[in-house]
Length: 369
Image (cartoon, rainbow, N blue to C red; front, side):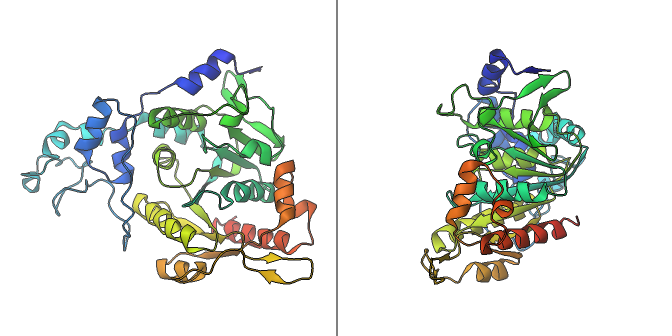
């Protein structure tokens, strides 16, 4: 087994592995002709997902501008049915192009066949502690389970530091890339392991992001895992569409969404939750992070302003998703992350550690583990 060569690293960082924007239409439900045009022109953009709420799961095989009785792009009658007359998608559907499957989804399913559960960790807003939650959940789960943590926050990879793995290299064998291990129970993969200099800026557009995420799910030898956590960047963009697309056949078992208490964060979390509903990702629940700070006297202070549209629990009730609990703002947690240590294990008697354990148990219960 050898380290990944500089040539391979350069290829990884520069490769565009034939990602077709139109393939995302099958997951995101966007307009097939527009996405095909994007593919032909090799544009480096993925159209944003409309965050409008859906009362129930939507069909992902019907373009937005299709008639109400559209048979679906995967149907044998696509482009041929009488209901297709006048539809702007008729020609491309009739040609069969619209239902061609991305082979990477099947490759990912085969590569991840030993992974029992796949969980996305999402946030609408940046800076809410999503990577902190991902890292600490991985530590918590790894006490008893075999866990993988995949970092697809490509432009801001924090996971290597938060797990104490800075300076580690990815190794390559005949079977593919081997993840970096914290211990026998916790495997990690991040672009942070591939950068020649940790201060290098990762300046990627859509296709390069898609290509690297594809390699992370098809070429990394994850082996047998109980849970694979996927730490994502904030928002609903290229990385999110890519991971959902590539895990289409393997299946995403759920998403955990992280927020802070204020309305500025909650308004973006609503968009994130609607994204999950639109692409068919089950929502495990919402974690309210940095909820209150306890000073030396024992007094609790709310650092963030109270939302004017109801708090996080109210939002979860209105949107019909579970509220997993709140995590307090703890300086010791920040220190643990900087040192790459498990917070709950190094500070077992603190309120924050108990809150983390409670949230972790709820997530595992939801996954039937």
